[in-house]
Image (tube, rainbow, N blue to C red):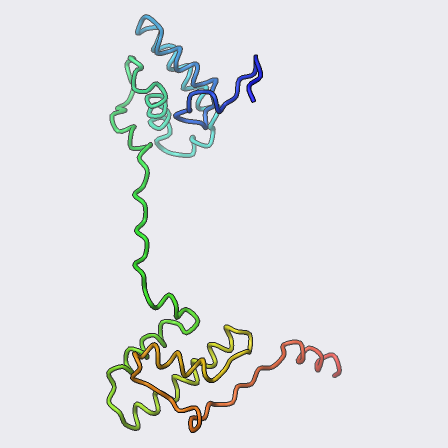
Length: 202
């Protein structure tokens, strides 16, 4: 909605350094338009003092004066013709945005976060292990650890079929456990409130 006489920030030119506000930007624009270098120099130093008052936290930096002059140079759109007290050639680095971080490559392990990296490595090992007692024992330990992890992830709710299916899937079908003969370790899930109740009874 446009109302005559009202000036919205969204309708104005975007500020190069919003932290200094639009009034200081107007001062910079005025300095650029002054006819003589002497006037521009005098105005620039006055603007720097105002910028410093506007952002006093800059004083904690050892090179804060350099930063202020760099900011002034950028706010003038590099048009301010004065005797710069320091080199402002590198000022544009301030506006350089960091390169976006690369998105992680799709990793099947992302779907195994409830099992963790260690079990993921065990799955890889099981794919190449020869049959025998050593592999059987590793399968037993792995399946039980998977059940414990899934139980913790699912707050105690877990089915043996899920463990068997996951173990087969993540070993590319190399490991198949027979739920009719395989025996999982017994899992004990204690209610954390139960121990508090027992303490109160004592």
